[in-house]
Length: 384
Image (cartoon, rainbow, N blue to C red; front, side, top):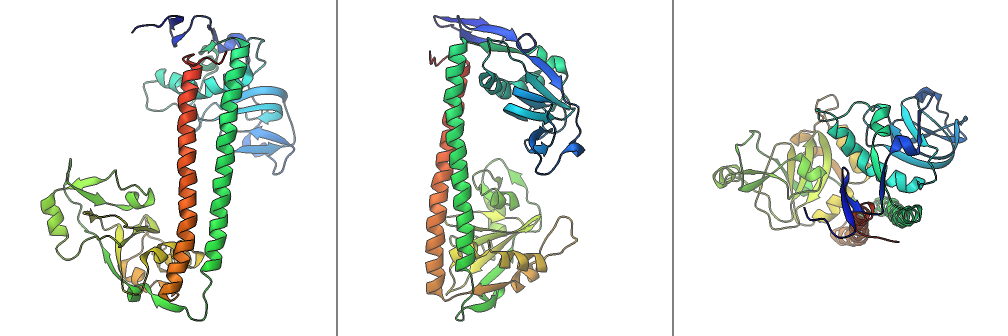
């Protein structure tokens, strides 16, 4: 690999010539806590760091200052990180890295450590996951150190990016809460609304009960995961011959609704694209009748009333949870006249479009931040 002018090859990669490499144990103090999860106190005075992303509360503190914390074992091993500058307490199986020397910016350290520690510990095991972290895994980890001024510039830049992302996340949460409130208001039945069984407003079918023979490529074969993940690009495939056999009586068409009925139940997906696919028995297909808006039904499926109907008609003790085709047909729906259905749909669709645009912006910001971060942490972009 060609190394550009002003850069050098090191055991942790190519970095600028004027950057140093140091082991964490030589630049900071590493300690574990003395508390158990049971020591948490609701509404306690101080943050209490346990082995998860959730920060509990407690009325004691064992340290006051700048620190980076990570889980020492459990499902959060190598994945849970916290930065704090103030009073806090922490679990006996949480590592606290503190007391940084005068060559280290604490937030720069947090950024580098939290983005590289997992890959380090995975290199040290033959297993597919790591159950616990030994102190030496942290102490012996090497990190690149630009000048303190450049560390500070990197930290400020990425902290600003994090702040922007958090503000957008809060806005999206607020918009979703507002949408839920509007949904509740719009779906309040009026005197001209009618109560209908689902079978009165849609033809209800289910998919094949036999697991088909999958092929490398061919006709998409939908299942619960495609609906719950809202992802119809990553599917299994069946052959055109088998697809023809499965669709002799009926097929999915644009304007239909797929509903999950095994495992996760009651999730709706409007098929608003030209489709050529088959589907499994874990899904129900709703072919909406004249005078009913499929889009309205999809919005209605998110109401508390509909969810209660799903719960009431499902097989409560089945594993996995499921709802039979007959019970789906009996689900009651509060149905306004078609004009009102369309009016409600337009309002909610406009809100959904706005939220989708914000989600796309958030994902773009995250990608930009990730790309810039890697450039900054390897010195490919210099701020000083």
